[in-house]
Image (tube, rainbow, N blue to C red; front, top):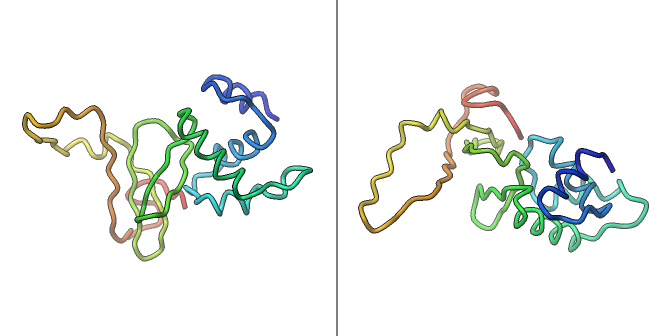
Length: 142
């Protein structure tokens, strides 16, 4: 277990078990916004003991609740996971399914005018469309 991963988990109040460390390490080192099944496939052979899908799902939920990861929903019923927890948004290429990070400053023109009924604390934007270039509108991550 790397010191960085152990410190990251401890900082968020998560006990660093081998399973949590392997899953966190994979997500910190990928930009692909994987699903739980993709995480399972990527890490299932990284431990000397078998790893169940239930353990992966439970670990992902734990890491999201602790703030180590963000859950990104790109289509109904399909959660993806993102270790980049800083303020940013996403663009989903509907043709390829690739997910691109969009920096918060790139959405600065969005105006939230919801009247007095709502007090906005935060928001997340997911844009769906066709990416014209593999490196636009943001860095390719899937």
